[in-house]
Amino acid sequence: MLELCRGGFCVLESVELAHKVVEIVSDKKASDIILLDLRGVSLIADYFVICSGQSERQIQAVADDILKSLESVGVKPLQTEGTSHSGWVLVDYGDVIVHIFAPSEREYYRLERLWSKATTVLRMQ
Image 1: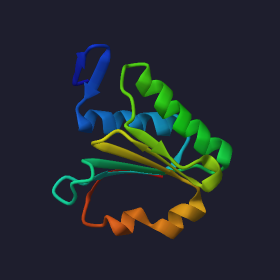
Image 2: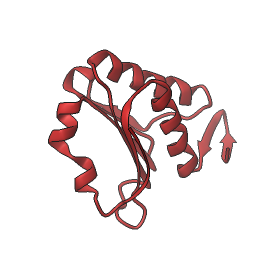
Image 3: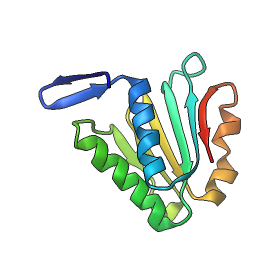
Image 4: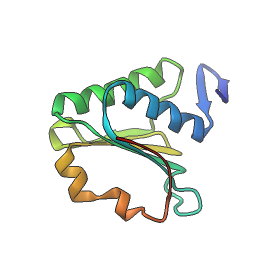
């Protein structure tokens, strides 16, 4: 894993961080996981990880595990937004933004369609 550590904080290369997030959400049984490469399409981030949780409890567990797992190696988010109750939790790591949706909110917002010019790096059902 490519990382640079200074002062107790580690910075993963964005592609490595994105793949680590995919591994974490997959381990928590999130569904319909998509990794989008936004480089060349947007300045917002390099990668989006989009996944679904089947219940409020699962959405919260996925978000908590991402935060806990990455913080344990010194990687902290810039911010988090939303709640499992709202059906959409966003965890922003700067170059990598994670979207955890309830199925109905995911269908409503259709981020994959909105960012259709991005390259799909991987898709896991």
